[in-house]
Image (cartoon, rainbow, N blue to C red; front, side, top):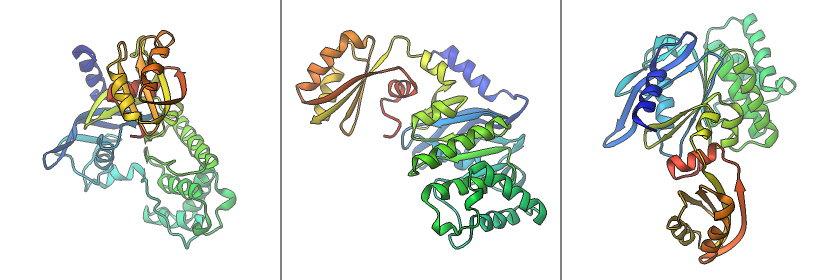
Length: 328
């Protein structure tokens, strides 16, 4: 990204826009000598799903903690629905529905009883609470199971109910921190469908995930982070267009992938290589002409079980920018 493009993106990220539910401006937070978040700016509009992607240690959790008011920034600002966020900002916090990675439910209560309890914490009246409970149960697809105790729910059902808790007070911004980790395919699809529905109804969504296909399905815009900095931002199509002629070869190897990775990095015209387990991803300008040489070099250090040419996508963008896969 050149200086002019970066400046335009930064200006767009911080410029007030009608309907913004979240604006983060030049956020910084350090832990000792480690800069966990180093000058991050972005905004989320009403009805927009914004994906925050990055490898482990990129700073995503720190950003979510500052956005939700759990952690105070060293400098910079967070505004939620036009209200400045800080640890004591009750009005700003009331505009957020935060759904953490860890399920926060009472297992000995039914799904409906859990939701009624959390509604009472928001001081929602009994009649209105019953209506709200019925609404959010419908959103997450748990109406038929609402009378069962949560201890009998599957992991996926618990995560869906966790999202319902985050929706009970009709927040302007829903923060979802890896909501599909460890869930079955049916529950995962139900969660993604729920997010799509909420976005279409005008709720802003901040979404983190380690599944690139989720970001491609859900997110209107995506930010890619690494080492505390935002290194790219745009729609999935805009980010993919930055690749130019780059193409993506994926190898599955037996033997010593680390030595194969090192050898492939020395191969012209390879522009990027990363390995996770027995999978090695290779970026090249022309996969058709380069594939035989890539296989030959890899085969000198490991057994090549499979080799495929992948369509350029967000995973390819992520590999080029960070040198890592999203799940690293």
